[in-house]
Length: 67
Image 1 (cartoon, rainbow, N blue to C red):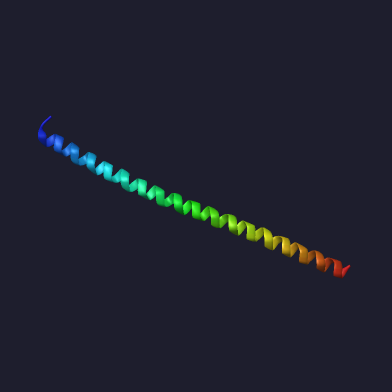
Image 2: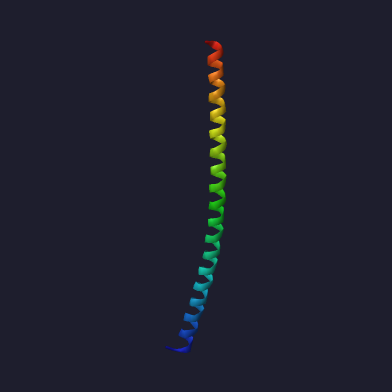
């Protein structure tokens, strides 16, 4: 191989390594976002369950008053 080809190969390898590093950083950001959204989803599901229980209780009270 000529020095020119080796230089081109080195440049391409360096670019690939930089791309890999950027993708690793993006992946870490996406993992953090996913974790945050999972926590938020869990909290919202708990709130929904709580509201459903409250509404069910109030409807039960209304039914008792009507009967």
